[in-house]
Length: 278
Image 1 (cartoon, rainbow, N blue to C red):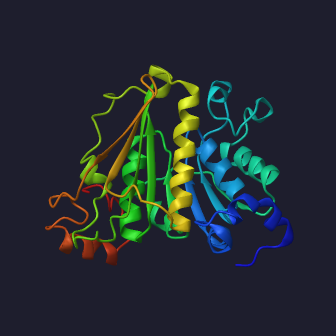
Image 2: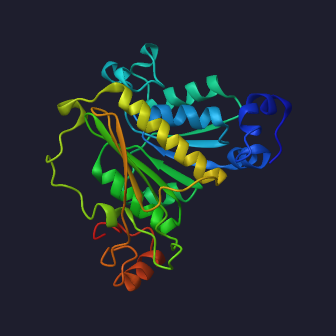
C-alpha cells in the first residue's frame, strides 16, 4: 500500500529503520486492529497505534468518560467528561493522525457478539477490565483465527502476552490458548476492581505502550513474539520478568478432546452461549 508524501514525512523515523522500512510501514497502513477497551490500557495503545500509522483502528467500549478516569486514561481530557469513550478516543485519533480511520463500537463484548465483531479485523488487542470480556475475546480470536495481544493491570503490576492459539509452534504442537495460561476466571468478587483497589496511573501508560509495541511487532514481523511467554511488570520494584508457558492438552479450545466440540461450534457460530462451556 503506497504512502503519500505527507505520510513519508510523518513516518520518516520508521522508514529509516531496517526492521520496518517502507514494506513494514505499508503493512501498518493496511492493517485493521481492534482495540477492546478505551480506558487505562487502551488510551496509550490507541495513541501509539494511531501515531504509528495503523490504517484502521476499531474502538470497543460502552462506557462514558468520567472525572476519575483522567488520572490514567490520557487519551481523554476534561472537556470530554460525559462523552462516550469511543467517541472521545476517535476524536483524539483524528487530531493526532488524519490518515488513520477510527471505527467506533459502543458496545460490550459478549460471547454472542464477539466472533462477528472480531472477524472484521486482522489482529485484536484486549485491554478490557473484566474477566467475562477477556474470555469471550480470547475464545472468539481462537475460532476466528486472529492473533490476540492481551494485557491486564493490578495496583502496581501488570502482565502482557500474545496468543496465536489457531497456529502451531515450531515443535508441531498447538500454540497455547489464553485458557492454557488462565484455565478459568476467579470467582465473582475475588479480585477487587480498580475503583476498589486503586491503581498507579503511569502503570497503565507503561503497559498500554508495551501492548502497542507488541501489536506493531506482530504486524510488521520483526523480533521475537510473546507467544508462549508472559511478560510481568512489577512497578514497585521496577522489575520486568518473562516466564514461559505452554499448551495444555486438556484445554477446551485446542486440547486433545476438543476436536468434535470445535467442529460443532464452528458450524454454528451464532448459537447462544457458544463459549459458555469453554
